[in-house]
Each structure stands twice: as C-alpha cells, then as structure tokens.
Length: 348
Image (cartoon, rainbow, N blue to C red; front, side):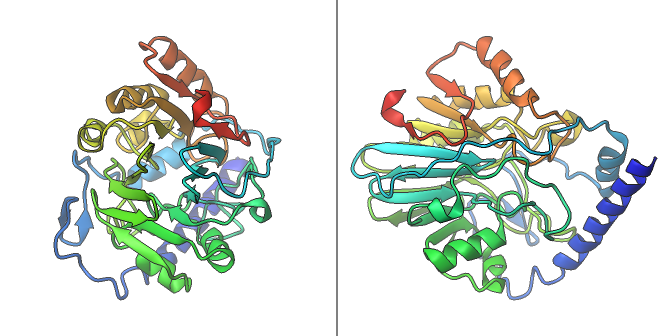
C-alpha cells in the first residue's frame, strides 16, 4: 500500500507540473495557413484518425495495471565514434531509446537526442533512464543536423538541445508549431516542416513524413504541434527514421512517394497495454509489418531498454521481436540494436 500511495503522489505531482508547463505553450504561435497534414480548429490529426484517450483512461492505466519491474541500471558499452564519415560510406551508432548518430557524406546527424537522466518536465521526477547514452556527450563528433520527431519528453529533451546548441549550433529540423519550445529556451537555428516538405543540408535532403502518433507537452496542448518521421537521402543512400508511431497505411505511402529505404530505424518497444497503446505505438509484430511495407533493405529496432514508459518488462521487446521475425518471410534484414556498436551499412 505504501508503494501505491507513493506512486499516486508522484503521478499527481507530475500532472500538476504538466498543467503548469502547458500554460505558455500557445503564446506567440501562429496558425499555419495550409498543411499537408490534417489540420482543423488548431489541432493536427493522423491520416487514419483514432480516438484520443481520456484523462480517466489514463488514470485507469496508471493505477490499475500491473507494471512489470525493470532493472535500476544496465551496463552500457560506450564508444568514441569517428569525427566524420565521408563520401558514400554510411555508419551509425544507436545511443539509446530513439537517439541515433548517423554519419554520411561528411554530415553528423543526431535523431531525438536525449542525455538527461529523466524524460519529464522536471529533473527530480518522472521516468529515469536505466541505460546511459552509448556515446558520452563530450565524445560526440561535431553535430550538424538534429532531427526531432515530436515534442514528447522522451524525444524532445530541451536540456540536451541547449547543450548541443551551445557546443555545435546544429540546424534542428522538426514538425510545425514546435518552435515556441526552442524559442523559450533561447535555441535558434531551427526549421519547421510540414509532412512531405523537404529541406536540403549540403548533399543530403531531409523530408518530414507522416507517422501515426500525437503531440503534447502538457494536458491542454494535445495535437497542437505536428509529429512525424524523416526520410533523408543522398545520391547513394536513403535512410528512414520513424520516431515514434503506431501502424498505418502511411508506411506504404512513404515507400510509394520516396522509394524503399536502404536503412530504417523502427520502434519495437514501449507498447503495452495494447488497449491503451495500440493506436500510437508499434509492437514488434507491427514493426516487422512496417519493415515489409517499406521494403526496407536493412532495419534496426529502436525505442527500448532506456526509459520504462509502458507496462512490458525490460526483456520482452527483444523476445517478442525475435518471435515476430522468425514467423515472417524474413525478407531483407531487421535486427534489434546493439547499443554502443559502430555499424557500417556495407557490412549488412
């Protein structure tokens, strides 16, 4: 009982902080005149809309579901990546969660970078990491481009973005109506993109693509900023980063519009209970289906073993992924990540 009461207090405290954190979210934010993403009455929507979960459904999940225990800390292999990878070579390192360092054509690209101890509006409460980043912040090579899939705290981490801005001043690409978060943190050099909108950085073009998800930094700004993934291409390679998403027909749309990726990063964790998570989070079987829809040549699982965000235990995503992959047609290659390993795409 003491544990349950403590959890109630922590959750209620976080809810109060969320209420406060969203009070300034709409200040100075202009409405887009026209968007490729569904947009009405100040809110974005998905290509295949789903019903938003109510506050009471959230409470039901948080207080009346058996959450599996996780380890408090997991040993992490760390590496020092190369400063640059030139030409057609493509190397990548999965740092943890949805943070990936991708090196190609002389550019260093970092997805949803997260170096804070917690994914939360505050530093003293909320989900705490069990795995440290596989590349220490001081060992990062010069970061040129940062990709932000959406504004949830486990993907848009303001303290990390401030550190990156101060040290490297990378260009930050993100969905529409997220700029106020960066402006309030005095972070400049950002670009907002609509779905299917392209932005060029040297030899690589970046296209913001649909995902099935949602956005919020507080309780009253849900769906007010745009979420998505990225397809980025050079003349020789195509890479897809899904961010965080549920399953939908948009995977085939991405393939039809932009071609099959040479390399994809697809979530395989944070998906239970399905009655609450199914619409906006892939489970391992969904991820395998997405891999086939994309006709991806090589896919890598992400979004696992870092923050306990949902009810499955630490080891379940890898186990369930293995089952789903074994019963599929195993077309091309799909692997769970080895954190802290420098992968070279030519080795697959």
